Length: 160
Ligand code: NI
Image 1 (tube, rainbow, N blue to C red):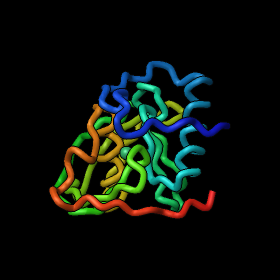
Image 2 (cartoon, rainbow, N blue to C red):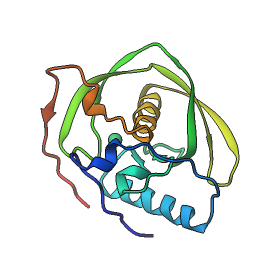
Image 3 (tube, protein in one colour):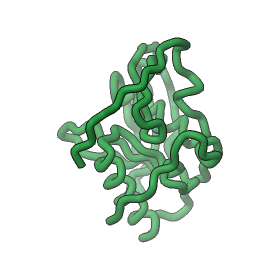
Image 4 (cartoon, rainbow, N blue to C red):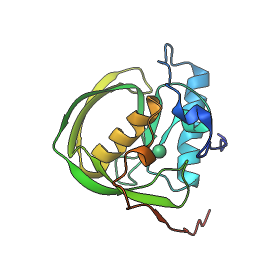
């Protein structure tokens, strides 16, 4: 496993649309392992492949609960419901946080790393993370959706 280089604000790749994964081969499994390691290194809750420079529809999410990291390949948003106003950041925008409106509940479908198509129903932080990460696959960034005037710069200690 290896830490991959993150792509940051201003990198044009972040605005590109990611492509479907056709075969979950060894290269994809390695990418997934690296994405999880990279997300953990930077204390992130989620990471999309485009953020490490790979335009593939792969997302990893970890809420640091007993579920462990979730891997979503070719995820599709099936349904969104309601609205929650939340504080949000992104590993591609270090130290920047803002308020944003996300769906209160989402239903998404994705392929897991074993190749099973699964459906997840989520609320609160998981709904927010799924919404944020699926946006990345379309080249959409949270910074373009924030509630005006709520952007803050907060330096964070990184113990890693
Ligand atoms: Ni992000």
